[in-house]
Image 1 (tube, one colour):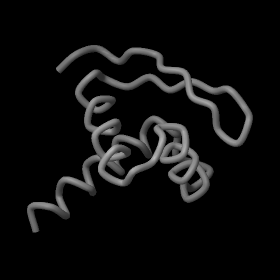
Image 2 (tube, rainbow, N blue to C red):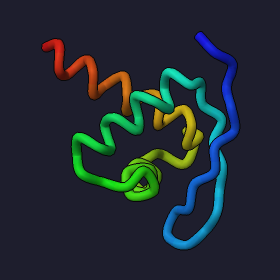
Image 3 (cartoon, helix red, strand yellow):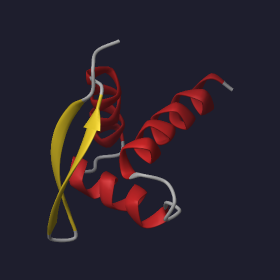
Image 4 (spheres, rainbow, N blue to C red):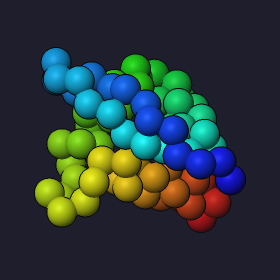
Length: 73
């Protein structure tokens, strides 16, 4: 697995960044494409639903994990 790389996002008009490994970033992009969403739209959706004590990058990783687990179930 690769080292995390800082990626820029715009959530509801505000710039932010997350550090994600290439594998998670690629999976995240694929999920956004499957859902016909822009990357920023999917990230904003995840951001709105996350608990305040969970970082956005962590929540994005968990989202990817849950997505692929659900496909295997």
